[in-house]
Structures are given as C-alpha cells and as structure tokens.
Length: 168
Image (cartoon, rainbow, N blue to C red; front, side, top):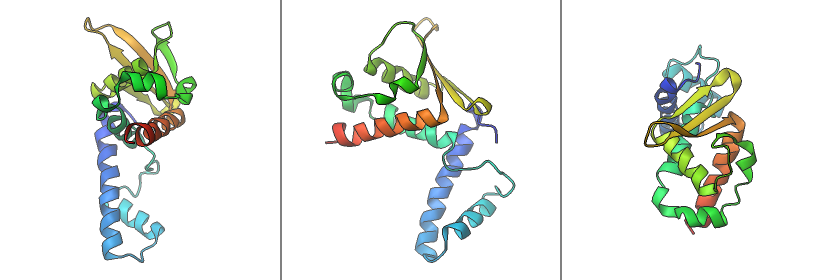
C-alpha cells in the first residue's frame, strides 16, 4: 500500500478497526495471544496479502498530528510555545520556506494549517512527508520536509509537551 495523501482515510480506518477489534477481543477472548489477534485482524479486514500494513503508518501519523496540533490550537497559545517548548526535534525538520528563521509557534501554526487543510504529500519510497502552508494569495509561505521517523520524534515531543506543560 503506497502511502499517498488519498490513502490516509483508509489507513486511519484500519487503525481504528484495529483498536476497536482489539478492545472487543480483550473483552471476549482475554487469553488470545497478540500473534493470534494479529492474524485474526488481518484476515477480518482482508489484509492477509498486504505485506506492508503496520500500525506505525501514515494514517496514524496524520491522526496524531491532527489530535496534537489542530485540536489543541486554542489551549496552548503562542507565548507558551515560544517560551516553554524546547523543540529539540526542530533540527529534524528541513524547512525550505521561508528562507529566514521563524519562531516555534509559527512552525507549529504552519504544520497545523498543513494538516487541517490537507496541504501535505507523502513519499513512501523516499520515507518523507512534505507539509506546506499557503498565504491568502494562495502562495506557499511555508514548506517543511521531514522523514517518517523524525516526524514520529516530533509528535512524541509535542505530545509530551501537551501532557506535561499544557494539561498541567
């Protein structure tokens, strides 16, 4: 399954089905092994011949981005992001536009806008995501290239920031 933008809803569907079926299996068959459950799940979803289905997929990444960037938009404010967010994974993001330094809150804002407006592309063969933002004139004013692994690190950092700094 090539990870293109159009396939994200499909990946999200399978991820949700996995979680729901896992909960049902825990309730009905608590002694079933994870290996047995995995085989059952793939058969149930007709994914037996799909070699590259895994749970750390593009759908999970975009779901996390939406849940960690778009939903809490009003909860953390730019001041907290600029003062308290260490943003150690910033070095993992290759920001190609703009060509001048921008604040943590601007990067988060642009990444959030990218996800909420589906301004992204996924190149599975290259193991990279490209996110962009457009200004009111429709011109790109932000572009970021990041690997799947680095995006996972960023989401871990932003998730921990939300849990430890914003929620508390």
